[in-house]
Length: 333
Image (cartoon, rainbow, N blue to C red; front, side, top):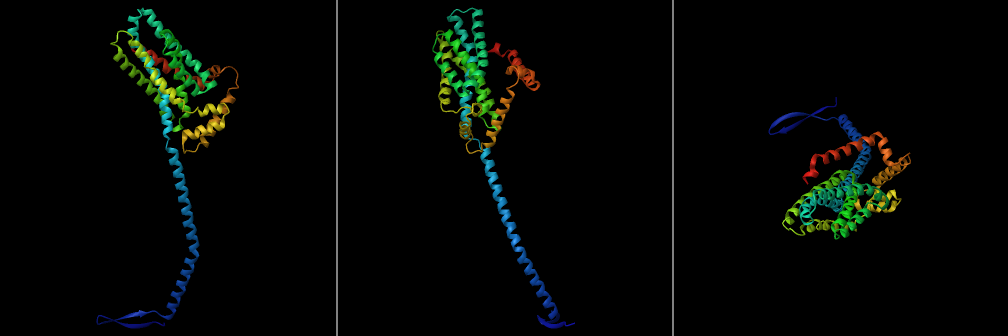
């Protein structure tokens, strides 16, 4: 009803197409108007969704930038670990060089086998006892001061006669060997702590290897060759002493002593652009828990032995060291 057919000429052919009626035209216009009004109503919601998407993208970019800053470790941390690990190098050098020096000492000083054994074992015993003393000195004066004190005594006593060298050098090495791993662990970021502490062990092995080279180089000097072997250990000691003049104190020790503002400055210096609030709070909470636990009965060593988890860890650690020493490495060196 109301439909009309019109003629269309197409290349000489005639065909009939159905022409739209007035009713259909009006319905199409109403549909178009309805669609236009719907699009107009949905425009604000689309704009809001686009704005929300832009905001989410900005948040993701800021989070990624923050994570990137946390992942980038400042070069200062590696410099700190390298200068600290020089204490491990010195420990390895001193334990390795004595074997070559003793070959010349027994000829020059006419030492018997018993005196050779006493000299070597006394140096090890002095280092062990001073390492026990180092724990008390670390808590009293700090890690940095203990390392500086040990290197100062080492450098000054290395110029003395042999008996004084053995009396002072070995305790200095013992204090440094105990302090250096603690300092590296407390100054390193958590995700690099294990790797940087292992650097100290690597430097110990490097010191032993260097000592064997020095022993071989000066073994041909029949007179005073042992003096050069022992005296060259001053070089890494002086280098570490100068480096520690510019290195900060351990932030954990500063928090233990109540120097919280200085601890935050040290953390900012070590961590660079990273956020230190979370790490600072973690260290502070750990120190507070230790202070609460320290109020128990008896000395610390007794509480360590009576607390099962600590006792098991202590047994494993001491057992590994014992079997390492009993394997015969000291006899070879």
